[in-house]
Image 1 (cartoon, rainbow, N blue to C red):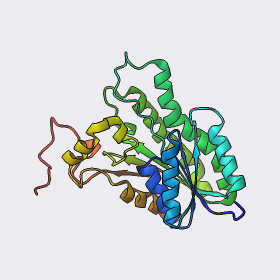
Image 2 (cartoon, one colour):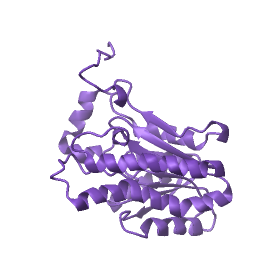
Image 3 (spheres, one colour):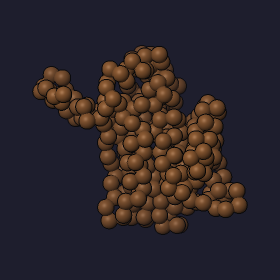
Image 4 (cartoon, helix red, strand yellow):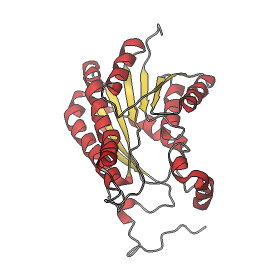
Length: 266
């Protein structure tokens, strides 16, 4: 690729949040680099969709839990494509509901490697170049588990909680150097066939129908939030935001024992 372009990198580029965010940035003239752990055909489809819409994109399979892979990807992009202006760490770390007894050490560690350590490695590899340029954004998709631990979520909550705190420490160090770090708590179900769809299997469509048209987060709409975060002026940065369908109760009020009837009247 001879012409160097501004790059939007998304690690965790499925057909939900990651793919839609890549398409949103590509529509604004960025070269989107989509990285995901598996499903080469699905990755190729996402790249083709962006190119068919007039955008520029490339895809890369990435074993993010393996040491050196994230670092090599960042170096290859900066050398061969262009400077990474904005990165989205969108890699999930959900291993499903498991009791403590049914959570082996290796399974717990995998959640941490994907949910927290991978973000650390991306920041470690990417932020020094952003500092030299005096600008850049690191956007991080997170989950309710980052702020509220539930039974069966030992690995996920530990990984997401660490992810949230890491965003805060990165912001404290790199915010004054011109780098915007934003933690996005996705406090609701997302219309994502590669994640929630896999988790629910053939119950996915029935689940969405039960929630109603406006009861599941539209990843295309959420992509607008990521775009907005990346374009905020330095005197008005948002460092944490949470998103949920308007019909849902926020995580901090989700207490059935004390909740009043807040369901919208239709």
